[in-house]
Image 1 (cartoon, protein in one colour):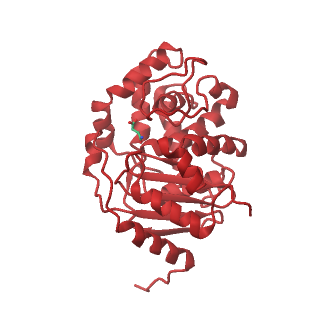
Image 2: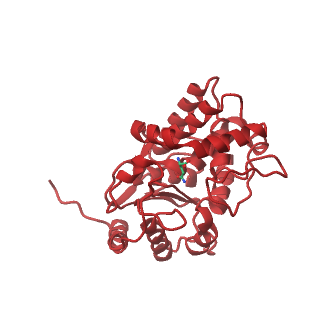
Image 3: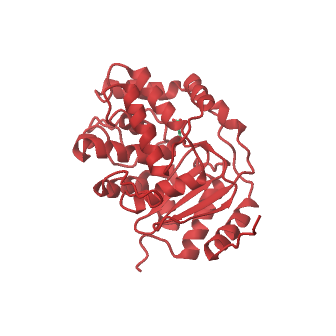
Length: 311
Ligand code: GLN
């Protein structure tokens, strides 16, 4: 095979990959038993530019998207229902609580924001579709359009989470008590579990983020996935609530709206510039990928990517 020359971006990604790969701090999430099978050594870094180029370093193994699905499904809900209808049920205030806390914003009878489970479960029921099956089809095809190809679903992770997902059921019942979900609570939570079990790679997360960064147009396929006007709303909640209780320090250090998930994925979108996809399953005490956080900070510093840095 012809040897591929690595250009300057790939050389930088390789360098960052080497630096972070040496770090084996952190632990793999095990509360969904199937996730415990992940290889702790895995680390993938991808960068997608708005002209449709994608650069990778490391290993691009598929993993379940988990909470990284939240901003993308939020984008679909905003596209399908409009901002005001979504805001009636899901607010945009950060919480100091864990992502899976059984909580409701009592002052407004809404879920706090779409990046915590309460808000994400409600959001997943707001996308268009006459039945729950049609709504899941909308989520599956929408996430696939963000990534630029049809994404598979990991049935083993789905069943594993369904078997152990009582905390999310408790959240969903609380949401129903506030009038935010319909009768069929269990089916609605299953849609959310299935959404979390969609399989992606670091490359997919980079292209998905680049689609937001590119005003809702996938830079690889050219498809307008969501209208331009929902992008600022989505990036706002990613910036304020996307990285669990590290959201403030992440914005300070890295300065790129992002969302992480328990399988070790991070998807970060720098508006008008690029998308980053990171994957490594070892998590820090905040629940973010250890290598993903360090890699993003190194890249942001070396490329001068902080959103609030005057150009
Ligand atoms: N499916 C997971 C859950 O709801 C997603 C959580 C996450 O990635 N933080 O518990």
